[in-house]
Image (cartoon, rainbow, N blue to C red):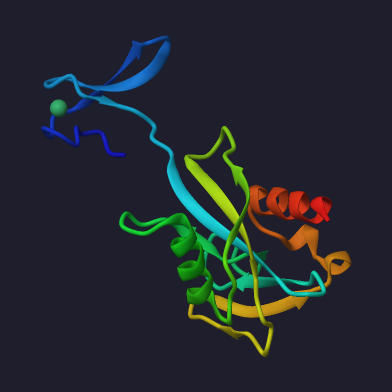
Length: 162
Ligand SMILES: [Zn+2]
């Protein structure tokens, strides 16, 4: 989000509009709205309700645990995105994604749609952006090392649902 208009290239100015401070183009009057973008994550679990966490190999949150996830691309369904992102991080046989929850904090532009997916944990092979993939019993989830508030909330909600 630079200082110039995406439509005509002129300089953007801050104006009060509809009761909020908005970026408005000085020439064509285009308004820049803070659009929310969609991400997906997957809680991959097995018959014993163990879950798979992956240790991030990229910033932010390098070395912390997360569930597989990433941004949704136009041209795929949410379920396809959840499976694609999971497979990019760890190669496992996966079931059909079931919607688990939707998370959007007021301090972020990213809405995360979280799916629960049954997986077969046989020596999970981590992908290039992942340091390690590991299976945890619910009582051993390393909560203090789990990155992203949305991940902690999603996991907590799923664990409570039983
Ligand atoms: Zn403009």
